[in-house]
Image 1 (cartoon, rainbow, N blue to C red):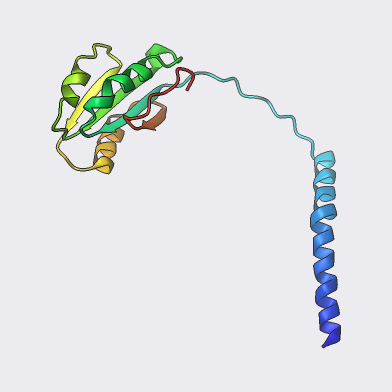
Image 2: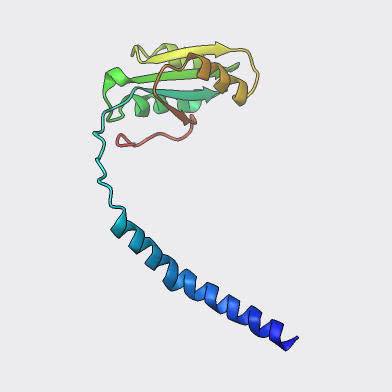
Length: 142
């Protein structure tokens, strides 16, 4: 029984030493042997569709749209879909007052946030999808 305990202890000690010392050494040797040059990709802006599902967001929608339209991002690459989930307040009217062509209102019957977002996904045309909520305005550098 004592031989088994000593063997388990020794194996555990070897594994700890390998993890702390051996594995980093193996990685260092592999990187020395297999050097590959990494070419950085050139960044280019992508088209972005903002999906904003809202239900009865009259109190926040104007400020949210202002913050979205003020984002420091190329105007031609930004598309904002306001997905109105059966609002009973003046949310759709507030959105319609925004004349910026980047803002599109999609009026839906009440069906919940998931259904509204699915409807938005079907209309989204951006390379990048940005999901956001109505209550939090965004910093222009977001």
